[in-house]
Image 1 (cartoon, rainbow, N blue to C red):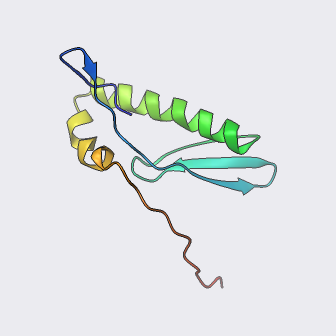
Image 2 (cartoon, rainbow, N blue to C red):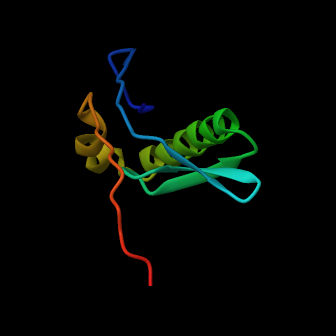
Length: 88
């Protein structure tokens, strides 16, 4: 999902969207980039996250930082797994 272009062909990358419910809203976060957003539905939270990621990547490109992000965006498969933790 990068805005970087080479030779007129847009490069594509992959990130993870983690979505969970907090109160009345659904929070969405991209762990690879540290970008988060929210929505009233899981779909809305994902759409808002996609917009936030696009803005983040556009800004990274303007600042010349997009190449630094490429390694975390180039893997076609990302795995997520719940991990149980003790709460005090």
